[in-house]
Image (cartoon, rainbow, N blue to C red; front, side):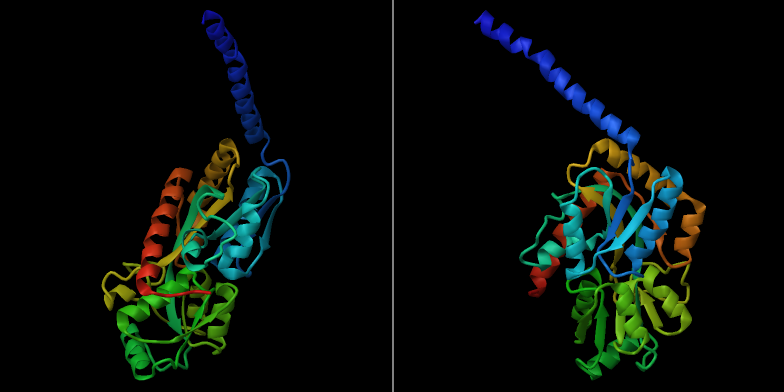
Length: 329
């Protein structure tokens, strides 16, 4: 018996040495990270909210760390194509995903055969921004307020086309929620990202849009889209001329939460280094002013808080989709 105990005890130094070695390796990775170019994948077309944020943050990361940051747009399947690419990338912190977090929290409830798990296959880094949806119409639509739009849509069922950044994404579900609350009906037109949706509404190819402020508000200010409201509960200081949808539909709130994730298994020390640097970037007055001017709030979070947010959103939207009876192919 004693011989057996001594044999077990003799293995403890080996185990301690093994785990100490792993710890030192991880610390070493964090100290040398990044050791090559960083790739930030945006799962939507260029020009949208995620793309604008990725390129802005990428420039600042290059300035801080001296390594090039390349932004790659891998659009398709409401963000699934780009997200799947990152989920299967090496877990070394050199391939990241910057996306509307609905891709990770909503898509599994929308698409029956997902190639990845939005929670298990990623390591949260940090949230970076919140942007309410800007709600607007092409100037040819004869309405100037949310109330007038509701009345017009009721009088002309299915006449209006609603441009969305992708089937089943947050803007799509926001449009569905609005239609359910008001009893109206319109036709959804999916695009490969918010920038394409904005461009087609501005050109008059589609009539209505509810999309992230960062990508949409400049076109509203130009007059090519008539802004009707924002989807936050309170008015935005950067867009004081726009009322809230909640003034007509109490409690109505949607928006675009943007965040950065890495492949699952990325060393915690690398995640911590990324989190700290992105938080520093987002806290600068330059970044705050730049985002505020376009109706967006800089946000940051711990990886743990971001994970909790994703889990909460996943549960929330799964219930909404279930209760609505909506089916997506």
